[in-house]
Amino acid sequence: MRLCVCIMHNRDRNRLSDELVSAGFKFTVIGSTGGFLREGNTTMLIVVEESDMEGLFSLIRSHCKSREQIVNVAPMEPSPAGAFMVSPVKVPVGGAVVFVMPVERFERF
Image 1 (tube, one colour):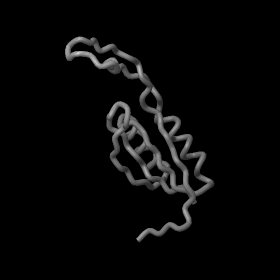
Image 2 (cartoon, helix red, strand yellow):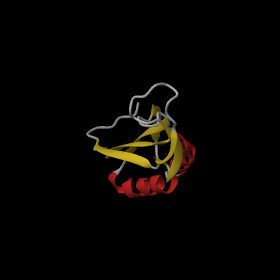
Image 3 (cartoon, one colour):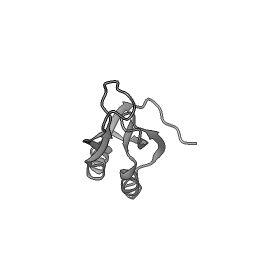
C-alpha cells in the first residue's frame, strides 16, 4: 500500500476529483498555496494499492495539464518607487507533483 501526495493547481481539482471518485479511489483534499506565484493549489492524500498505481497516475496525467500563464514581474535591482516598469513573463503553471510513500499500516474507523 502507498500514500500518494498529489499537489496540483486549483483549476485541475474538480475534474480530477470527479474522475477519482468514478474510478473508486478514496482521498482527502487539503487546500494549499504555491510558493512562486502564491496561487491556490490543492493537495490530495490518496491511499492506493500497489496494483492501482498506474491507473492513478494515468488519471492524474490526463487531468492535470501544464499550461502557460502571463505574470508581471518587477526587476530585482533596487530603484526608486515608480522608476521601474514591470514586464510580462510567461511561466508554466498547472500539472501535478506526486510524492509516493510506503504505508506500514492503514486503519479506517
